[in-house]
Length: 479
Image (cartoon, rainbow, N blue to C red; front, side, top):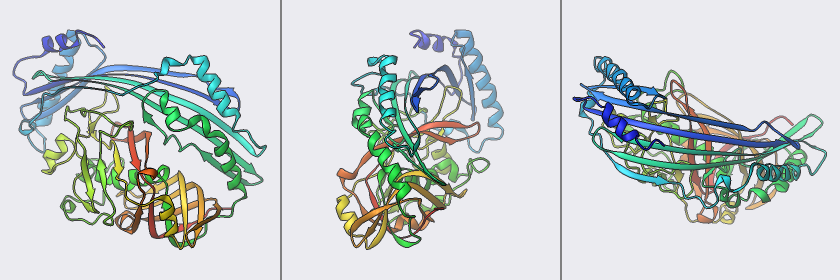
């Protein structure tokens, strides 16, 4: 990171602006993968630049550039100021009324074994080994293993002397096995990249990456031989690697405040949630406690400050089933006149921050996994998402899972394939009848959540226990 960037920013600042910030971002992505014993093209991508934000005369303007010289920064400030003057004529409110902070602080992902601890040759050898151990049966017709690492650093500066520097290390391991027999094809994966965490190569030990191949392959074969998921109304136990997507789609997105305000309707839809619901709406049963938690150790979207420089602190979004707070950053909070969280986030230096999910978690309960299972008369335990569909208001949904287990009279009886369930967000979470304890709690995440115009794909964390839901519609797929 340029050591004199702060000096150049101060030199480029004109007098008279209400507020100006510079956000420098640099990111290096590495992907190494092996498929059926063949090393795939190694991918490395470096990207860096800066975004200028100006609040001036009641308007808001942005300008991005890769020119970090004094003249380049000055030109970006002038362009952002021009946009601020134009936007002031059509603004919903005056940005001069927003109390913007000038924070100082740092954050760095704790890393025990850096990405560079292993040479490229050693990583390739490891992936060949993992991939090779997936081929346990001729019916495994495709298999792969991959590692994605992202090193990200950012520097946020403000015209009032604010300075926040943050450095992140992201790991996303993945394993896939595809089994086929006749017309039947089944897939088993390592969480569909859901095992993503912050950290270095120690993440592979935490998620037991090297121990997983044989089990993944064996379960793919089991699915070929399993009966279809039964159709009916019954209990469903969702394990963390499936519950994370349920949480993401039917709580995370509908609580994004810009979506509630209508900003996303042209692209990603709206929300069934309205502003008058906060503080009273029964979103789930009394067992449901959902938090925005930027302090969760290892989680994918842990950070100290968001991209508007707001200090990130843990907040309850839903407490004892009651909706309390939206996922809205500084600007949306001002528009909606409601308290939110520090979740103004940008996917890159050339994108402005918008309201995004970060670490959205379900707090653990008191039940063991055995207790959740023993409370089921008839139901399905489901793992790992493989398909999803949800309407534009994030209300009606349908999800499919890779791996299911049929439960009868409190006991797991056998594996089932093509496990699907459907429901309505507004009532699904009220059917929550059991929340797993800390032993069932897993820290997970996804590298790919899209939103915004122009599009922004961002990293999101989800940590959840296993949870049981009653009276859910389930159905199988084609045999």
